[in-house]
Amino acid sequence: MKTTTNTYRLPQTTTPEELEMNGIRILNFGDQVLLAGHCFSKGKDYWYGAAYTFTTKNHTCEGEVRLTAVSDKLFEDDGHAIEWAMKH
Image (cartoon, rainbow, N blue to C red):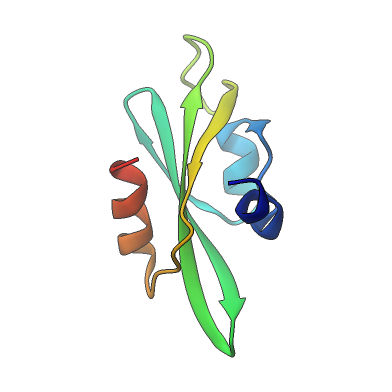
C-alpha cells in the first residue's frame, strides 16, 4: 500500500474536509470515508479508490481519519472506484 499511497500522495491521517479540498470525491459511509481520486496515466484519465476510517467519535468534516486501504487497480470512472472502496 505504501507505493500506491506515495503515488497518489494520500496522507496517512487527515480530515474529510482536507480530502475534499484537494479535489477528491468523498462519501461518508458509517465510520468510514470512502474516496475516488483522479489520476492521469498512459495518456488517459483514471480513478483509484481508497478508504479511511474515523479515529474518534467525531464524524464531522473535521474529525480525524486514518487511511486503511488503497486500490492497486485503476478504474475508468469514479463510481467503480467508490464501489471498490465500499468493499474494503
